Image 1 (spheres, rainbow, N blue to C red):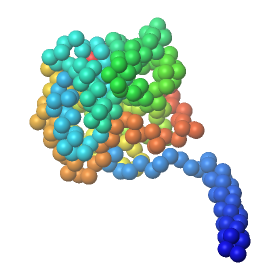
Image 2: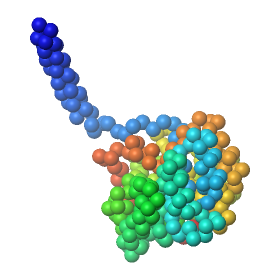
Image 3: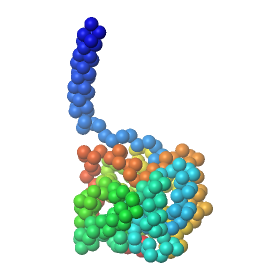
Length: 290
Ligand SMILES: [Zn+2]
């Protein structure tokens, strides 16, 4: 008796759940063209730190942990032999263990804007991947264009290598070296391998300028910040004084900003219909020194 009723009840549930699943599937298929990405909350800021500068583990990481902020560290081997001022691979592994994202920033930090250099990018990405694997860091899905230079051949190499997200500079919208607010990330317009830098931190930044940069993080757009060392002794043109950095980060915290890593952008792109970004065929060489 009991098993009979249970059977009937289960059968009814089964039919109901099948009907529900079918209805949901139809509704979803009808809605698919309209379904976009997860909504981007206001006050979303991506924090990125380039060039494997030593102060990133001594100054930056502890402050970010204190504030509950995520970030991406873009690692290049290029300056690592200078152990006094740059991270070791073991330091990079520690940043990964502490929950930060490790991104690929190439082995030689060359400009990859030309067809010849672009063709070599895959090999350089692999060299960094191999060293990361040696110290237990997973293969990065994020990349930062060295010197903010980019070109279509290198873009193809990123796709082939499985890189999902790549950050460029403020160029071509804003010339290199100018204290201006750069382009905001709009996931409906920017291709995910050409994510613009909104704020490139220079030593003459002020807290007022920083406030202008981060104010753009609303209406579905994201602010992407590019830092180097805090401080940066070897590359003083991208130095951020520690006291200024503390002011910037505390401003974000006090005003309810959400600081995320590059990889946290993944759910915001519509991967079945990526933007047709005109810069995908552009060649940009910013002639910067770092
Ligand atoms: Zn760099």
